[in-house]
Length: 317
Image (tube, rainbow, N blue to C red; front, side, top):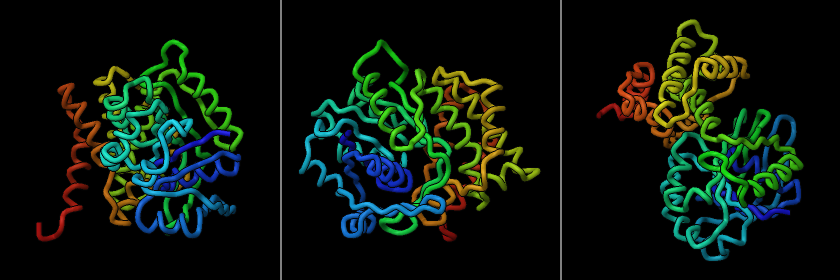
C-alpha cells in the first residue's frame, strides 16, 4: 500500500484518486471552497462512462496538510492542479515540502511546472509526468466526470540519470498504478513526452476556447484544421528552445492522434464556460516565449492567443 497526497481534487485528480482508493491505497486529497466542503461531507463521486463510484475521502486545504502531516509521511506527492495554480501551491506548500525528502510528481499541462518545482526542491526530487487521453471535469462540488483511457506517462526530471531512488519509486508507482487499472508508462525522456503533449494542447485548447468547438469539430473542419496544424507546427518549432528538438514525424503523429479522438471538450473550453482562469500562458504562452527566444515567428499561436485574450475582456475595456 502506498500513501499518496494528491494536490488538486479536480477532474483529473479526482479520477486518479478514485482508482487508487479502489486499489487499496491511502490517499489524501487537497481542495478548496465548495469542492472541499462537499468532499469532507459527502465523499468523492466519479462518473466514468456508465460506471459511478463513491468513496469517503480524507480531504483538506493546504493549511490542513501542513498542520497535520510531515511531508515524508507520504511516499509521493502528486500534483494535478491547473498550471495557473502552481505558483500559489508552491507558496503554500513549498516551505513544508522543502523540509522533507518526498518526491513530487507533476501531472499537469505545460512544460514549465517541473522547472518551477525543481527550482525550489531540486531536480532530484521532481518527477515529470502527464495524463494522456483523459477528459476530466468537476460536474458539481464533490462529483467528477471522466472519460478516455486515462493513461499516465512519467519519468525522472529532466531526463533519466543513473539508477537512483526516483527510478525505484517510479517502478513501484507503475506497478501500483497498473494494479489500480491506470495504464502507466515510465519514460527515460519525460521532457520529450511533455512537449509532445504540448503540441496537442496548443493545437486545440486555445482554439476550442475561442470558438466553443470540441476537438473533433476543430480537426475535421476544412479551415480550423489548418489552424490546428499550424499551431501544432509552431509548438514543434518551439521545442528547440528547450533542446527537445521535435520533428516532422512528431507533428504528423500528434495531428493524427488528435484527429482520431472522440469529440471532447478541451479543458480550456470547459474553464472558459465556467468562468475559471485559463491555462493560456502555460500553453500558448510557453510556445510564444520560446519562439521569441529562437527569433522565429508563430503567427497562428500569436493570433489565436491575442483573440482569446481580447475576447476575455469586459465590453467596457
